[in-house]
Amino acid sequence: MEYKNVETFIEYLKNHISDGNYKSRKDDVMHYYEKVMREQAVKVEKFSQSYVPTDYQLDLPIYYIMQIELFLGGFVEYDRPFVNRILPKIEALGSRIEGLQRVENIDFKINELLKKNNKSFENYIFELLVASLYLKNGYSDIEIIKETSEKTPDLRVGDRFVECKRKIKECDYSVKERQYWYEQFQPVSDYLFTLNRSLVFNCNFKNELSTYYSGYLLNIIKRMISRDLDIYENNEIKVELYDVNYEGYNNLISNEIVRVDQPLFFKKLFGYDDNVNCGITQLMKLRYKDGYYKISPEIEYANAGIWHSLSENAEDKKMISIKNNIVKAIRQIPKSEISSIHLCYESYNGKNVENGIKGKAQEFVKNMDADGRFITNLYLHILRPISNDEYPGEFEEDCIEFHIDGYENHIEPYLLNYT
Image (cartoon, rainbow, N blue to C red; front, side, top):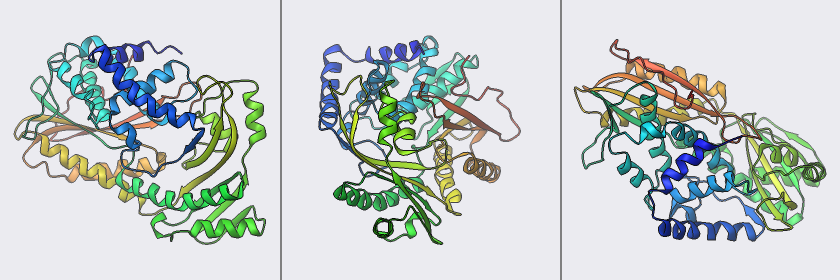
């Protein structure tokens, strides 16, 4: 598949950085990345709200550009989760680059986006996507509003102000949920490593993860191993243990190159299907014959935890950050001005959870207090990743368009569906 639009936008970004400065910044980021790979061990780090290792936060814009360049260059090792989220957006922006260059203050926004200390790279990308959305709908008088000490919207489109809010990869509840999972995973992973046992532990938590005491899963795994049990279940959890499929993986890589972060890699080695609403965390020791760049690694050791969490309260809690972002967006809008709000929600929870969130969002917007603002439209863009071994950055997009005060803006409300 060709990525001409991606290459076009990446070059556009790099042209805003002097050659020497770009090389120096990229070398600093690549130094750490290569060091991690050459140590031949990839270990999961504790989850944080940013999902970015501290070493990369020092220059997040270059980290993104570097990862996309690794992907475009055909390298085996690249940060698939980040490339997944950013590639379709870069593709969309590259397809509208001529119009974007005519947007007022576009160079100012790009320079802000590329600042070394910018921790909001994807938020800025979303603002550019919304600007390109209005370009797609035939608007030409578009201005990116420079930030001041006063609260301001992000864009002006003709006589309309536009505020953009993008949720982090997961809502606050999901971040905490993953932290609780990590606290269960790490002791089990360390225990299996000391035993030199390459196992997958597939866990279905029947309650909220916050209710399980530290070491709960480890105690169960120890009992299962001592009693040679493949499956354990009670009213709180169901756990299945099975071997890492080294033979299947080795047979696979004897015939084709497999990128380490491809869905196919996790399916074959760990039996993990990322189309199912579950997560995976793993510890691996990798060995490369001729450097780590363009070959599939041999696996010296691996274990993995696959987890599902069933929670009746999760839906309500996942909606909280959406409500908070809507309220924040309202406060950014000037009073008595015609305005619209665009909210991007990247969904990793499955369609059932999404449908519940849609209903709750509709009810919230129906009864929300606009605080004297003349907000005519609110767009909730839901981006849903699709598992695809050939094209890692494929998304589906749903958009709920709320008409407020009886006024309709009549724009095609899709960020990524460019024609």
